[in-house]
Image (tube, rainbow, N blue to C red):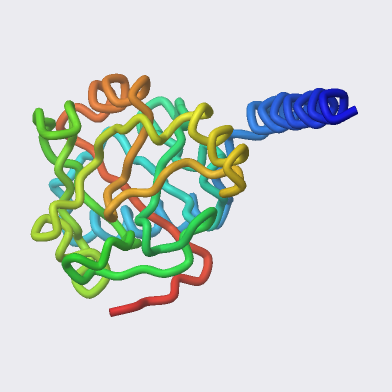
Length: 210
């Protein structure tokens, strides 16, 4: 009897994981219209003050969405072509959702606002790109905090399923405040950014914390 119940329980868990995986794969791409509008408004405002800028790429990370969605859109500003990617938020910003934000060093939180994407480099996490925060008071300490765009194994469907099994919810891992994408996406993202891009992080109702 015990063995039969164990088999039934395992079968039920496996079914749940398969269904969850199928659902996640079917709804992964999600960036809200509000996030797009805020990102383009911020970029336009920056270009008004810096008319020499001719950006080619813009990434929009929508932190109002849960982390299991592909909530970062990478947009080619010349063609309109978009690709979508998983992206992690800071560990002290929240679990499934990013709800709290800070620009304070060692806060381990994400910071909203507009960033300039700088040249790629090889670091502790492999290929990465440094970021310059363009909004003092929101993300102006990004360079000092070593906030970069890099990749990690914890940004993956496998990690989402692992968190489900361990009852931590359907979420990817979290960072120390960096924008972290999957291992399989980083080279394509870096190549598409080149040396002329911006990134905007948006949250519906960001709550600032020191």
